[in-house]
Image 1 (tube, rainbow, N blue to C red):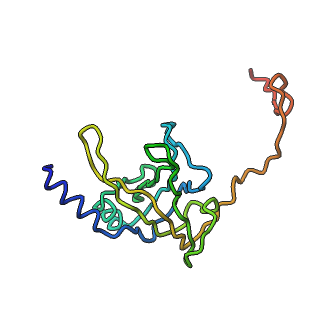
Image 2: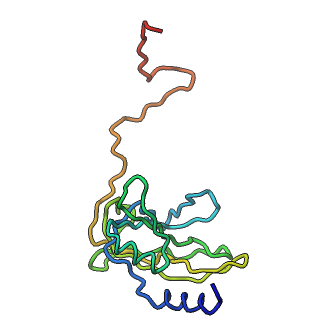
Image 3: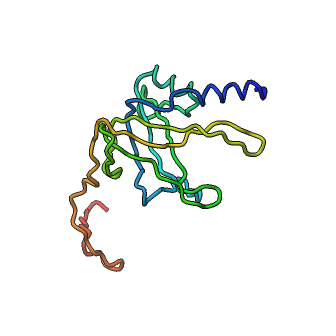
Length: 178
């Protein structure tokens, strides 16, 4: 791509609306005090996965420049992960994405569970490294319009203290066939 074509492409992306409406939200990791390092890269981020089953919507996301893919385990469902770095290149802390409800009131991001629906505000940012360049979309805010509350694990076990040298606590059935 020529430099002029690249610049025109970037201008087109930067001038588009930066809000994705009514995306299904999955794997919401937006706790301001607990950014994640999903790939053990040393870079802490806040992130979500946006999903849609609408092919036209997925195509619109792709046209904006978002890395949309069809999920292998759920054919007909398209997904895009978006994130925001927790620290800049100098190591300074960045502001976490805001999370609000339909009335623009702040909500606890740790209660936003898989299947919630929201509007996602992104901010395009140009990057260049090693002779390559492009646009990445930083996650700025999420407006949750339909909350599926995350309530934690559904395990109903009690905590069991097990001595590593002892089989107590493990049910072992003996089988005469062996």
